[in-house]
Image 1 (tube, one colour):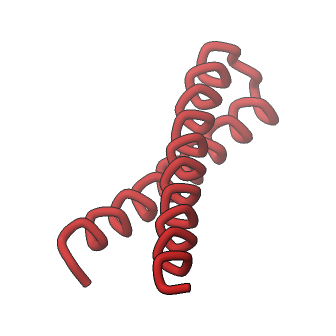
Image 2 (cartoon, rainbow, N blue to C red):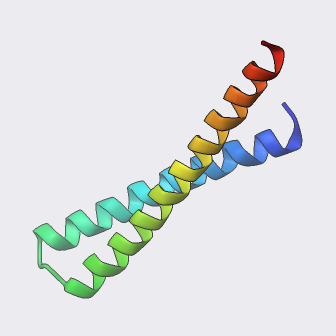
Length: 72
């Protein structure tokens, strides 16, 4: 595993944790005492982390496809 692969795995893990924490915060404030500011902030953070995860995972899929096609 090279340095960039390790960093990519770190980014995926980091964004998974951030998205999970933000989702729990949004859920807690939406269910208990609905404070709109916390729901909005948590939603923005969760959406941002999920978007970064999608970019990272699609980037890996494109690299895998290019690697396979290079040898075919």
